[in-house]
Length: 342
Ligand SMILES: Nc1ncnc2c1ncn2[C@@H]1O[C@H](COP(=O)(O)OP(=O)(O)O)[C@@H](O)[C@H]1O
Ligand SMILES: [Mg+2]
Image (cartoon, rainbow, N blue to C red; front, side):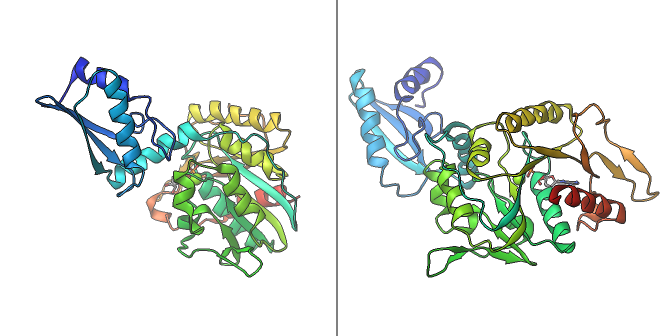
């Protein structure tokens, strides 16, 4: 019989302090406890593991038995199943929210042969940060700049899929990582590193992943390196700001009020760290009617921030989803690149 209500709560409270030995977060919080059943005198605890055949399952079993044993539950059986892909995805988010830690001491890396390092940042996810990084990089490349892109979003990397690359990066004889080059633009992101799953699961060791990707990559001579930063005002973007010698920040906002409010927060982060904010790119602020070409504002963004607007990008509808950018958008993007590269 499955336990419910207070009875279930009581057991859950007892096993709450038990952490997944590898991830370091409570198994309850990680939603690894599938159900708890009472079968005669036996208490059956059904656990879903993150990795099939997890060698640490015996540790979890031992911990559960001892936690319950102390409270008089002598007859405990622990059964193991596995999480589905969807469940794993959810866990990654929990891990991301919980685990991102500020390293004790942050190493600041050298400038290398890169003229300008530009961080593209938004306090909120899903506002088009990665999309804008791609557009800026491609525009700058078409203008003759030598450009690279570094995806600093360790738990939600999207540069590889945005640029349509599946290749992994390889190291040369000297141990330097050769970035994957797409249409002339060297790219680096965690999913190009062979041990990227491991990076996620050992807890996002942001600083070591950033170190590997920024420091150990053979970028060559670049005019501009765009950083796709992790969203949020947590330690993850701050770690990037503190370890990579960023020259300027470009902030992305959308019309939503919320994103403006959070956008302000991102300015505070940049200001606190003393990094110049170059300006704002307003994304998805208007759409152009596919039939009559009329420009429709989605929301009034005027009230946003007291910052120069580098570009305004429309909501790109299905009709031009292949990002066929009209002259106005291209000119806006070129304008933005000029201000950024200046
Ligand atoms: N200007 C735009 N018009 C239409 N869709 C967009 C635009 N910018 C971004 N998107 C879409 O919004 C989603 C989030 O964009 P993404 O660049 O991944 O955001 P972020 O990096 O901030 O999380 C993606 O599906 C992307 O295709
Ligand atoms: Mg992104």
